[in-house]
Image 1 (spheres, rainbow, N blue to C red):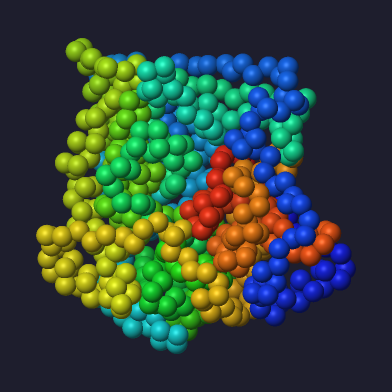
Image 2 (image 1 turned 90 degrees about the vertical axis):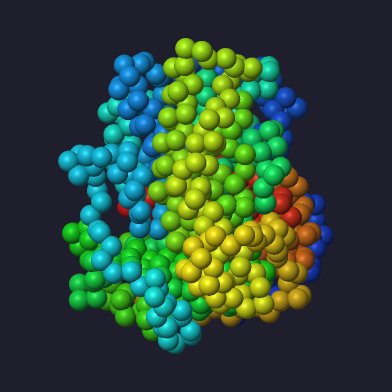
Length: 600
């Protein structure tokens, strides 16, 4: 269910509506207003307001039921499913009984998975040598791969996953798959090693009080827990701090990918064609690029999208509106004219690459896939590396679980072999070879300087230069104050090629139980207005691709307050990454909530 703009008094609404239509942003004078009323309470989640200090929770039974497994996997994306499948393949081949449990917060396997839709099939074929016989839905071999630079009106040519099906294969092998169960908490043994995870509690009112239907989550204990949450996982964030996993790497940097599926006029359809571009509508100092893939799925489908680096500096930039504007380019629009948009989604992407990979193992667990960040940034491809990391993790864990000479200093097994095996694989070599492409875009020439660097040092030397460039720090630190930036005027959507935000979110199938605490939690409810709105003109109202954050007039007195429309959240994690105050902490909502992507 989508949330409309807040109900305002007639006069206040007319003023606010006029401002939005005229400028698409709150004017600087308005954003400097501070509320004359008490800061309203926004966050009610127990991670901010502990239950042991809340009298409404007195006498509530907080006991949890526990299950024991050999391996627990958090996240049923390509990496998590690859690990599950490979573990069971090995167990069958060696006649071993290994219990593997996989939890996934989406209601259906694949419903929260959004990718560019173009797959390097190497790891997939390694995991499923007989994939054709099993009917894997890989139907569109790439027949033409084009790359270009877009100016405002011209195109300059430049020389250039089937998750639900994998879930079926995992279940057929005996993996216990639990969709609709969100892993909310990491559990630890007394010796500090990871014990497993707990799924989230259900039956909690929006104000944080227990309902009559309240139920505690389930504990899943394991000898090894694999964290495959995807980009910027909320449990992985805790593990980074607990085990200091980022001590010897650079901060992760990110992009936001926005994507649509269209059914187009058949005369514009070129099955197998792949188009990538950089440049317009982004300036040279804003990293990003687009893709347009012509699919062969029985009807004239295209998948298209724009990726915007989240290290952008102008708080007035809206990735969603940049994407809508991009579709009007003379080289893009003709493909879409006469077509119909059928799906929309958005997701954060890891862009730090080789320099930002953390330590991958710790007592009782390990990280795989996009959780630590194995995406090949210039190719905008990470499914193949994610799958390979899952395969290597499974093989390393299996060796340790079945070792007759197993010795462990902790109760939770520390599978250090996994990181060693990954560093000796083609994944490490591939990521190392492209390590300098993304940070090379930070120079005076921006993205174009990066292209020159790539032409010299990647295409000629294949990434063997004897140095490694650094990133410019965390993305949230890059945002400039609004007073130092120029507001961006975005054209009004025409309803044919470009669209408004709420109609887009409707196509994502996003839905959450309304009566639950907002999972977009704030460490301090006053910061959005007193700092973010005052200094940065409220960038959360623009960087969110789902209309979750709105600054609306307060009911009494002057000023604005932040309204969080948590039901709209597509689980992209952008707010947690880009918030300049690092005040937003994304946690899981009740299991089953979120987008319902199909074929994205």
